[in-house]
Image (cartoon, rainbow, N blue to C red; front, side):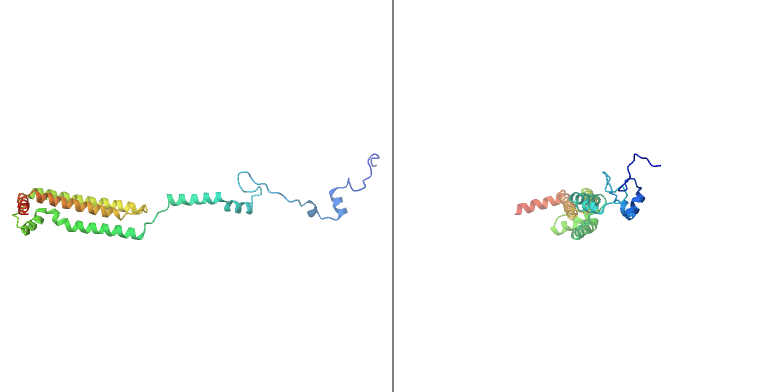
Length: 209
């Protein structure tokens, strides 16, 4: 028996969902298919369903902040792991000057190893007596030779290091060559001026002038 106090349903209030669907002839999928809104995690662009929104990724990729961060990472990689290549002209000039300095050192090697024998022909041409300060000339010649080798080796090391940093290096062997030539000329000048015959020749030329 039905409850006498319960009113008779007029519009299907007490009907089950299946009975209501059958009454209105609406499929189940169309009635209960409710779109699920994906909720984004506050710390990332990954949705709860595990799918990233394409529009959010495009917006973040095209934003100025993202572009700046990407450029900063590229610059950091270039600075830390990249290798700056020097210009071809600077590299060629540096190698050429280093080679010229090495050739000059080999050409002056015999004269500096036996400086008295190298000075004697000059004395003969000037009409001066034989060179007599052999010991001093030997010391000065070997000192100039060692200095020349050390300066060239230092120039080579500095040039290679500077080229690897991508900076101009052509001036290094140039300055080294000037220093080496000054040392050699100074050694020869001191050895000649220490000889009494040469100083007598200089005094005669000064009196005649």
